[in-house]
Length: 377
Image (cartoon, helix red, strand yellow):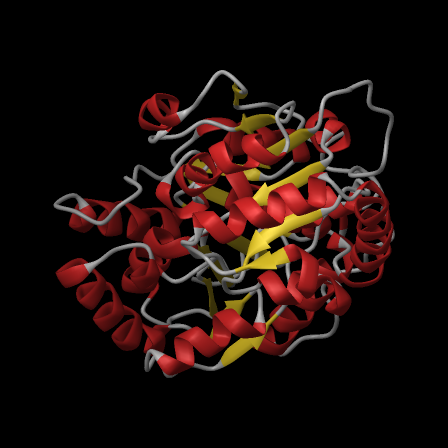
């Protein structure tokens, strides 16, 4: 695994199994910045929209056949990845999320600098024996990560408390503040928007359980669930007529801009992107107090914008309170946008990740971020 004699550019390999949602967005943001800097960027993934977008950016894309969850196919996935590594010959591997973190570290075994980014810990996503097995792996596999990159101090603290002894770095998530901006909306009825994959992690079921009480307080309220996922059919069975299932969208900005309130009732996170995107669009947010949530909000917002997870009654009260307080929502939206501009711009995130790469490779600066072009354009 050495640099090609015919191409002096440093080669970075981003390895990921999720090809949609926040993980894919992070990979594309980093690839955009690194390509602009002149690095050779390869993205290894199972295909999907991520592969299409990465090619459009100019990255090399390699097909890595992998399922989302560990299973009987893991050995073949690791073997296939080992062959891919021999062909790509990266100087640094950046593995994103649980499956790529598992297979990537097993395939690389520390032979080149390896950065593992959990995007929320695997042992939080499961229960019982599966959670114990995931935790055991994370503790053992940490030896093969030169850095474990967390997106919030809370995510790092969760790892430390769980006994995952690693060399940690924390770089908060960022979003493209030139793409996610305030804009006009013609929506009239009070609208709550939830953007995210329809799955247990994102907690849409909790919001639907809270919704009847919201309607009792605000009878004209509407709820839009933006996204798709494995829980779609089950959620539909819980939903009254005032709930719209929008499905997956290429551009969530119109929904953020139309919202009176953006809600993300997650059960666990590292640091969710949707609240950052909503605040960048000038909209107030309400999130559950899971890893990364407090750190994503302006400090003064916690009293109004943070609720405990798994508490539909408290969630309903907070949603109704904010829907009935238009001046408060306006103030929260304005302060939220200023906070994201100063703290969560994707260029700040990319610079910090570049610093980690420099540290691991022991070289002069790899990346200069002069281009302001959006990856969404």
